[in-house]
Structure formats: C-alpha cells, structure tokens
Length: 386
Image 1 (cartoon, rainbow, N blue to C red):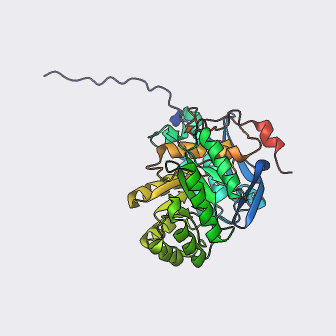
Image 2 (image 1 turned 135 degrees about the vertical axis):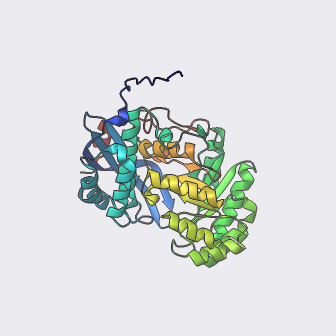
Image 3 (image 1 turned 120 degrees about the vertical axis):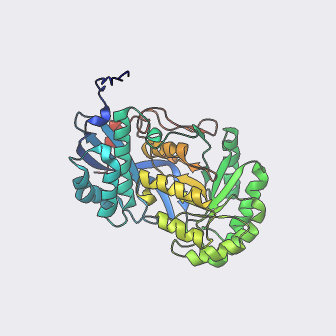
C-alpha cells in the first residue's frame, strides 16, 4: 500500500492575519458653496454642509467617509453629527480592528437612535480603510461589480420652464439621457404642464422623473399625476409626508405614474411596510438614510427580492468622497432601473484630487482601492467650519 504524504508549506503573509487597529477617528464639519443654488420644496440650498470622517489605522493608513446634513430627511444637523461621532461612535471603534467592520457597524447602529448620517460616514470611512488595506475596491469587498458604467440623472430646478428646457437641451448635447424635475413648489397644474412641455421639447427617448420632496397634499399630488400623464414620467418621488403610508398607498392606486419612496424610507422595515401597502414601485436608497454601506447593500437586496426598482442617490450636495461610495455601490446593485444620482458636480469645488466625473452622460466606477479616489486634505481644511 502506498502511503500519501501531506506536504505542509509555509503560509504566505496574509493582510487579514494581522488586525487593522483604528487609532484615530476625526469628525470634520465642512461647508462648500454650490455652483448655483438648488431649490426644492420648502428650502433653497446655496452651500453644502457635510460631515467628513477621517479614519486612521496604526501605521498611518487612512480612510474617508462623508454624509450630508439632511434636517428634512434624517433630522441630522452638522453640529449634532460631529457630536454623534466624537461622543458616541468614536469610543466604540477606537482601538478596534477595522477588519471587523460589520461588527463595528452593528455597534454603531445600536448606539444611537437615528443619526443615519454620522453612522454612514463612519461606516464608509472604515470600508475605504479596509479596501485600501487589502488593495481592492469597495465594490470588491461586497462581491464585485456587475456593471462598470452607470447613467446618472441630472437635476432640473429652475424657476421658469423655458430655463429647464434650455438646460436640459444643453445637457443632452453633453450626453445626459436622464433628468429629474423638482416639483411640489408651485401649483400642481402649472408643474404638470411644465413637465409635459419639457417632455415635448426633449423627446420620448430621454428618461424623465419628478421629485416633490414631501411638498404636496394628496389632492395636489392627484391633480399633478393626472395632468402630467402625457409627460411620460418614469416615477414621482415622495409627493406626500414621510409618515403618510396610507396616503401614498391611496395615491398609488389611482396614479398613472409609479411612485418612488424617499423620505419615507429609513430602514428595511419601512421598505417592507410600504411594499405591503402597495404604496411604492421603487425605492430611493441613500446611505445616510440606511446608516451605512453594509445596511445599504442589505436594503438593495431586499428591494430586488420584492421586485422593487432601485434608485441610488446622494443628498444635494456631497463631494466625490460620498459620490465614489455611491458609484461603487451602484456597480454592485441588483438593479438600477430608476437610476443613480451623484451630486458632487453641483459643488463649486470638490475635495478630491480627481473628482468623480460625468463624461458623455455616463459615470465609470473608479478603479483604485477603497473608494477609488484620493482626498486633498488641504481642501478639507480649507472648507472646514471653524
């Protein structure tokens, strides 16, 4: 009988074999001017107030995260976001192994009620840190991309319809094929007429949707969807208040335009509840609402299982740090039927060496490790809120 000998070879050094100890977690409040003001229901935005999180490991490796203030969506304010990180989240992760980021994300999720923005910024910074440690992209940390190129939507929010048309036609020449109208500001009949006119001018092959940011009553929303029927809108986003699930369900039953949930979606539980009520046909998913990268991946999987369309979005307006995270997530999304919306191009300036760019109407996933972008720390300090 021939005996089989087992040859034991020495293991090559594995980066995962050594812990990646987090030695510093810095919360940095910033304010960056927009290229031009953006108006949506109830608010005019002239500058972006965001939280930047810088995570540093022993040895000096760094990771970056970002989250926008969103008082009408998450309730987060800039000063509170900084305190949430410094006083509640940092003590949970400092001295811990970043390779156990899923466990750390759960700790952070349970440490505070709400506060999705600061939780998201911390989780994104740790994902960037771990990706850089292994030399792989954030997308590859979650199984790898299924698409490398995405078609972003462009936001139209001018006071006059002729200005929206002119801007849309200009962007179409640049390659854009997807636009979002801001509604819930004027009389719904006027906004519906504007949507129909924009459709007539841009043609049938361009994707068009509308977002009310909770700015409509049920009666106004019903009037809008009836009058905007010929605009061929892909969806109407969050016409009613975030807690009006019954109203959204009633509107969905009579609307010729599919409804997309946004402010009403802050967790997987809310996605399930809205789906059960028949209130939505798709979900706008933001990392600041879900509370992190891993939670967003989970939410996208749930949407796919329920047959819901996915719309991934940044808040207006986040830099290329958050935009890179969203594009990495978009590359692994089960579907992007309702588009992706990065918002760094609305800023007057960015924070990264090579910003996320929309070229010929498309975004390509950055290929570097982690988020795939390099942050200019001098820019972060320049826009830091003192």
